[in-house]
Image 1 (cartoon, one colour):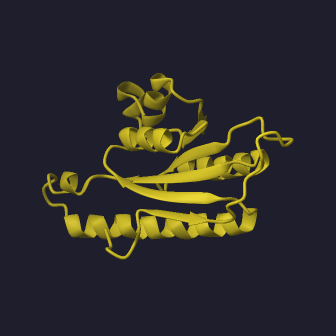
Image 2 (tube, rainbow, N blue to C red):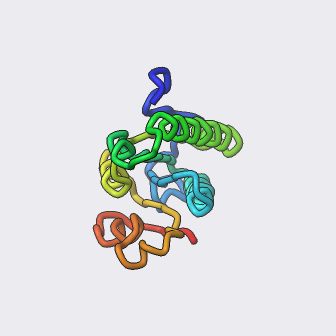
Image 3 (cartoon, one colour):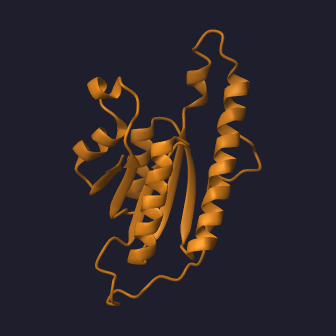
Length: 164
C-alpha cells in the first residue's frame, strides 16, 4: 500500500437529521462492501441511493487480500498484485468522492486488508451499522463453500441486503 494513502477518508456533508425528523425511521448508517466487481458496483449505488433517501451516513469498505497471501502462489509477482490493488483502491476512492459530491451524502471510505467477511463484520460493528449491503458472488465455487454475503446473513447481527 502506498504510504501517502490513508486507510480512512470522509467525503460530503457531515450534517445528519435529528432523531425525530420525518424520514429518519430507517437506517442511520448503511455499510457497503465493494471490491471492484460489477455486482459490488451495483451494491454501492444501491446503498448510496438508500442512504440518501433515508438521510443516513454511508460507509464504503474495500477489503484487499492480506499481502502475505500473494507470496504463497508460485509464479505470481506480489509487487504487481499490490500495485493492481492500490490502483483499484484509488479508483474506488475517486468514485466515492464523486458520489458524495453528486448526492450530497456523508461518505466514509475504508480500506482494510485481510478476510472480506471478517473485515466487513468488524467495520459494521465499529460504525454500528444498521444495514449491510453487498453484491452477490459471481464465483461458482461460492455456491458450495459459501460467499461473504451468505456468511454475513448467517451471522444474524444486521439486516443484510444482497444485490444481484
